[in-house]
Image (cartoon, rainbow, N blue to C red; front, side, top):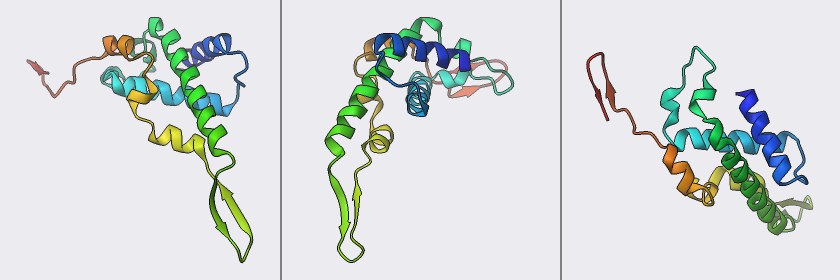
Length: 141
C-alpha cells in the first residue's frame, strides 16, 4: 500500500509542484484511495492476511487518482480560502472567537460524486459487482 501511495504522491507533485508534501497531502491520498476502493466495490478483493493492494488498485488508475487528489486539494483550498475569515462563534464574556474549519468539513461531507467528478467516467469502468452470497458451489451477484 505504501508503494501505491508514494507513486500517487509523486504524480500529484509532478502535476502540481506547489502542493506541500505533508500529513495533509497524505490524508487526502488516503481519503481518495479509500473512496476508490469502496466506490468501485474493490474491497471484496482485499485479503486480510496479505497486503494485496496491488491487485485492488490497478497501476493504470494511479495517475487518475492523482488527478482526483489535485482536484480535492483545489476544492479544499477554495473552501479554506473562503472560510478562513468566517467567524463560526463568538462569546463576549471571555472574548473568544472561533473560525471555520473548511478542510475537515469538506473531507467529511463531500460525496463521492463531488470527489470523483472529473474522473467518474473512467473510475466507473473499474467498478465490480457486489457479491451478495457466496458458497462453495455458487456465487450470486
